[in-house]
View (spheres, rainbow, N blue to C red):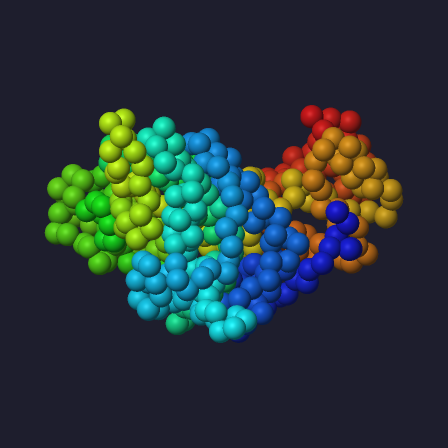
Length: 403
């Protein structure tokens, strides 16, 4: 990709309403653009990062048997009435269609996935079943804030699991905790993300949140000083439920994922049952597991940055390499062609602007690897190679560059 044709605009100053590091840097670097409060456009750089996150999530969920589908964003009122959430879910966006028919924009999809699963699940032989999607969600938040950390429209992975027994649900639930840890590790936030006990479990004492420590967070968590398990503010006990320790560290955090044992909460309203080995009808048990992709992108930037800009983890970097031309010759163009032939995704800064401006923008954008071609390096038939976030660069011979 030639940087001279890339659809973006970098800015020296943060937005006036910026409430978080990620909001400031992603806006300044040309990854996102605010359309209205809580509504953002993802520009080409931002979309490339979102697609990287999507790929990581899809890979890890499919490892544990997840099958991807796509459910409608426009959901009928009667489904929400069956579960009692048409009136109880305050954040629903409601609208009327032709002939006065009422709908909600999908804030979550239990009301759609449960009756859909009923068309497939008849016997214990059809279970367990794991279905997920990656799709837009809409929630009428009273206060959208901190850029893409809290929005009214957001891309979300929601996974729903269907089970014949509590033991099977418990087993899969534990597998998803491990899946989430792998996802957060690959996205560069694991070191500051805590498994957090929360209220709200329909079929167990607790549900779980994954809370990432950040000053931009509006949640308060209490991390056990002994085992590292956290509790959120609503269920904080005097002693850690896991190890009985009574010393906690208070932290500000943002929720980057959550998992629930739903039990039969959404099975019963839709009469979602199966026949067991003895031919008896039993209710299907469910779990649900969510991750907001935009929030995860913002969370990664909250951790991975310095005073110059973003430092993308390698797996999230919008390009493999940022190639920067500081000389007037054709060498950089030739290197660009060579790297592309080797299958590398390269952003080539071919613009006729100052070296200082190019390097400052490169730091701001934060691509994980940088190659600089200059008269000084070419004297040694080399280029300068540097990883974003590291102080030292190395000289590499052009003939050895691909290796």
